[in-house]
Image 1 (cartoon, rainbow, N blue to C red):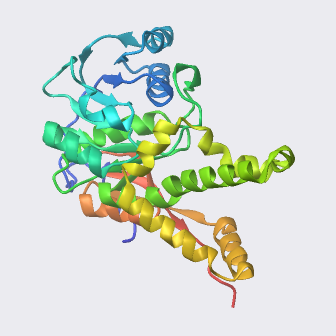
Image 2 (image 1 turned 180 degrees about the vertical axis):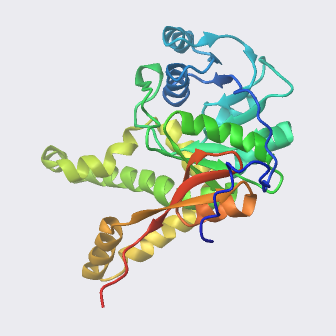
Length: 323
């Protein structure tokens, strides 16, 4: 990507790539107060942000109220859908949403969600996916620190309203995440490789160990535990994750099968090299312009701070190979 832009963000009268007026920080309304939604609401309350929320589960509503969330069916500001993929399109049914509100989501698949919610909300919708969470679920799994240091993919399509995109990005930054600008299709291809396939492999490893018998399971230790941890997740969640992203997941799984057909020493060496490669971070400053932001994301970088006419972030920088 291009070198960092010069710092003219504090210069009076400096030109902006996209004029962004100063606006008051909007409130946040979270629909779905389980692990992700409840954690986001709790983290924002801790940051002094006004937060309201709703969940069909009265236990989740009560837990959110204990965290300082105002429970209501009236949604305004930035409306965050933190609900399972199968109910994403109907999550707002029966709720009253401000016509000017920005709508975003935390779903693990983006193209199908964009098709459904983009059609319903137009330029008001900004797709998102924080790359965090555990195999636990529900209000008992709420953790206000869940997003700290996490990457938060935020979709930037040709028709995305950049001002609304920035409002959602500011929420992610406020809870300690780093924002990765992507398109929905790019997100789904990438997440198939690093999320859908690991869930499928974890399921296959666990099932194969079960077939090996009780002795194998009794001897299982750290490597088996780590390799199968994610399949302790709700099976409905995992099924929605892989079936909702079926084509990219199948392509990513085919690449894994091809790797397994290689000579094992070569495979082990190459896998080890990828997993242990150390990369530094080079700070960059990027103008508020779609192609520049997407270039940052495609390079493996992320946004860490919003300025007036720019964002600050980083891109990976690997050491030069020794001669």
